[in-house]
Length: 320
Image 1 (cartoon, rainbow, N blue to C red):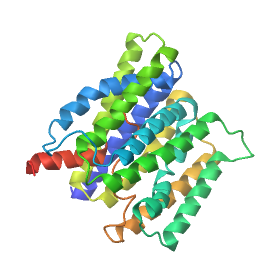
Image 2 (image 1 turned 90 degrees about the vertical axis):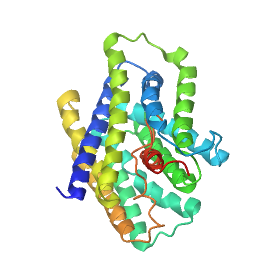
Image 3 (image 1 turned 180 degrees about the horizontal axis):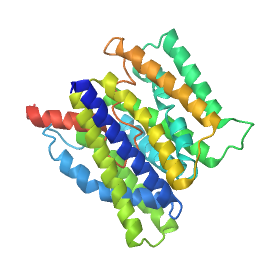
Image 4 (image 1 turned 135 degrees about the horizontal axis):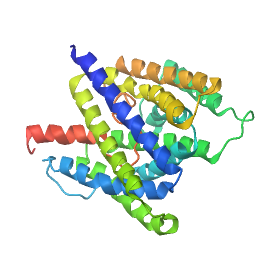
């Protein structure tokens, strides 16, 4: 099998695991607070991530080289996690994904002031068309917008912020710093909020919380394998397969049938994102903010793909 075909299949499997992860978040969200779900997700995820980061042989300490950018990214990741988990809990799965898929469009916009990268006319048109797709999904004025819609928009925006900051400081910061700071902050913030929302957790719910951590970690490791196997331009678009999983899972478990507006809007957003990836694949290697965003939304509950890739590369090469 050709490397790119193999990479695509691995990525499809990875995003299938991520979609299953989000189904469990939605299931738990019917009975428990978002803060409680996040707390246990990070708690169970810590050992898995720690075992992986032990392989990072990059010398240094845990003090960030860019403290303000690191703090901003950490806050954005925590907000993204809370917003995304809440959106999955209260909105139909397909609708949530459709809004979250706007993140690459926002990354393109943020790359201008933060990275100083040029965005030419065709990508501008793609961004505008994609944002129009978001409006088609939300249908302002035609339907009542809920807090869940706002949460999904905040999650998409926060994900874009975290991704663009990693592009800015990622070469200077250790992989351990990029991964552990957001997870530790998430654990502390959600732990502080937990006494106000805590509900007793039975064995089934505890197992489902553990499954969230395992699925998120396994999905991340498979995406790492996909990027190591094939080209980014092949792997990156596979994230949009989550809308197919979401539609199937929504029908099967939650009696959610996506309406025409959601499907049309999602198609517009996905087409815009794919076009941006295509244009970046033909651009100068230094001007690829979306294509080099190797992770899905950064919820601070699982490791970033780019950080894991770098940690494993350092492990092979040895200390520098």
